[in-house]
Length: 69
Image 1 (cartoon, rainbow, N blue to C red):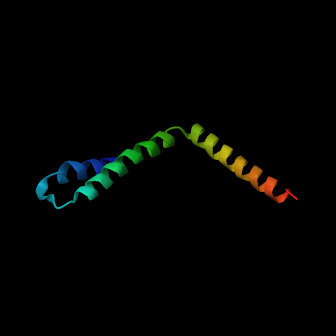
Image 2: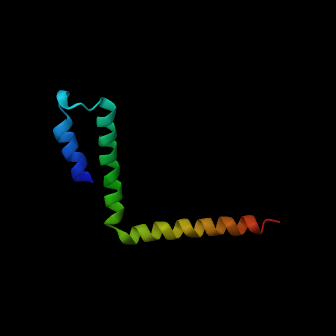
Image 3: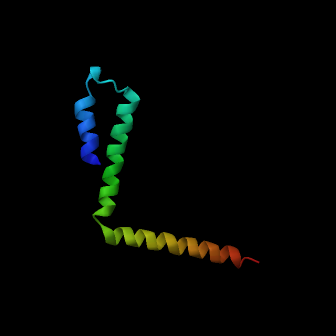
């Protein structure tokens, strides 16, 4: 994904390419967010820990709401 965005930005960052400024900004934003995805995909232990904590928090919230009365 990152390579595709980079090639779009390199080849289409010329005035005659036809991309608007907002399209170029969207491509740059996609490129910066793909770095975050790559960061977590290269660290499966961290991803598993975050997912486990989130699932436990949701489970605890549901338990508290069900047993509130």
